[in-house]
Length: 420
Ligand SMILES: Cc1cc2nc3c(=O)[nH]c(=O)nc-3n(C[C@H](O)[C@H](O)[C@H](O)COP(=O)(O)OP(=O)(O)OC[C@H]3O[C@@H](n4cnc5c(N)ncnc54)[C@H](O)[C@@H]3O)c2cc1C
Image (cartoon, rainbow, N blue to C red; front, side, top):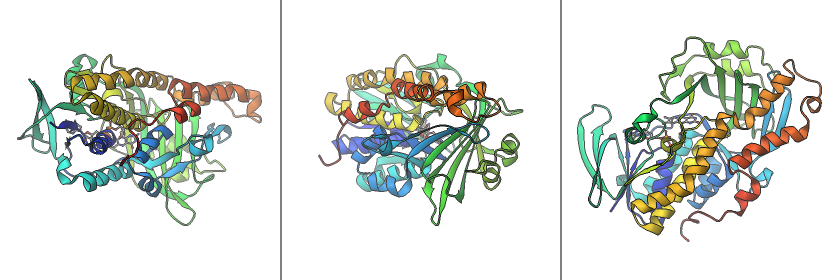
């Protein structure tokens, strides 16, 4: 039989590659007819990078992304509050990558097509209905553009990798309703600019209310970087939070006034914003942790199972880990509901914890603490919040979300490398 995967995002494509690795037949059904490299920067944590390396994607990640060396937090005046190494520099056995989401998706997509052939993905087809049969599951496909029925596919199980607006999740859990909105809007931009700091640092400045994230996602030659930025503004005037669409355009003028005087000596934020050609907006949202991720022959995965606030660089990484664990359980238990339950038992509770940790601001909490204690800036950060307390705030999130260096380095591989 065939494992049916709904959605060719980061989670669905990783699952496809993982099933190919262990020889389990699969088909990915994707609503979009032709994938394009959409989105902005994302970060991959070392445990997820290890899984992509095991899939043979080390060279591809190196070519497409930046191995992040450091994360640094600043107040709204650009004064440094905290910094710490990341990835290899922090002692992990694998790097952390900052990478364009679309570049990662295309890397996974192209690798999958090369290894499995074009029939592995059916594009332009939306999973609109599904029925359990005595020995499997049947899905009804409709044309994403015109809505006409395209036919049916039969498989052993259905894995919902259909993202934050998952139809499958909302059908299984109709009581979940709308996403939780923090009434905070995130504007995103990508711009070529001068390399800042060491060219490998992720920066987060400001505090709740107005926060600015900037980091390079690729080198763009001659001292330059492709810089990803996110301007996160709480309760902005006149925004429509109900339009949760990744391709919704925003305007530079929506963002610039809030950050007009953020001219830091290490980065000129108004200049960065003003030099950005296209800006997109997307509301900050998550969904409540679910009591279960499976329903008979259906399993939820990635954002469909656990959409979380984009704080702490965990969203895409958790989808990758989901995919590897589910592939292992399908190998060990066969293409059965038992395999889906075994996957859920490993993944659900720890990932639900991350959703809750991100609601408490994750590691960004240090910014709010310092903004409250020293709203006008400081001469000596240690006099505002001693180093031990800043470290404690950073460590607390890592421990709550399974990102401790020793913990990650000591874990056995989920599936091991391709070809072994
Ligand atoms: C276009 C786009 C841009 C994004 N940009 C960013 C970004 O800049 N920063 C960030 O942090 N996160 C972004 N995300 C979200 C990010 O990709 C996820 O948080 C994370 O990578 C987990 O991915 P996922 O595979 O679970 O879901 P997604 O990456 O959201 O993928 C879901 C896939 O399922 C497909 N799909 C949905 N419904 C159906 C259906 N009924 N039938 C068939 N296919 C279906 C969608 O077309 C999509 O390709 C973006 C998502 C999308 C879709």
